[in-house]
Length: 135
Image (cartoon, helix red, strand yellow):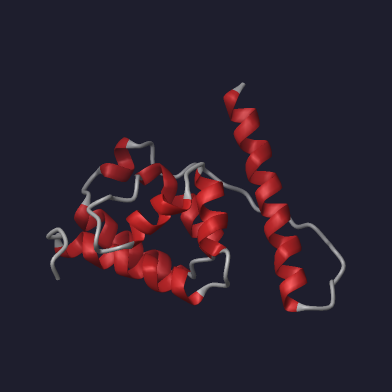
């Protein structure tokens, strides 16, 4: 490869992220960019081996949520991330305590429509939390 030399642990977590993004529905990169408050090119940079751009620790939980990482995928990503950036997650304050709520909605009749409703509800909740955190 003629791009920058990427350390193995960084390469590993970028490969996990890229693999997850590639297996998700169209539009996931754009939804992730919006959720991170960045543009789509930033998502390309943090998931591509062509760029040295690291994933900021404070974005990890949002990436997991928007990209629907499985528990196994989270463990794989975090093992590589922590090897690449020791103590980075601790310095950024680590993960915030979270709780789960359930919302009952009608079945929209198609997998795509259901996913759009689910994503819209998640986005709305994330935006409300961001607004409240700014106060």
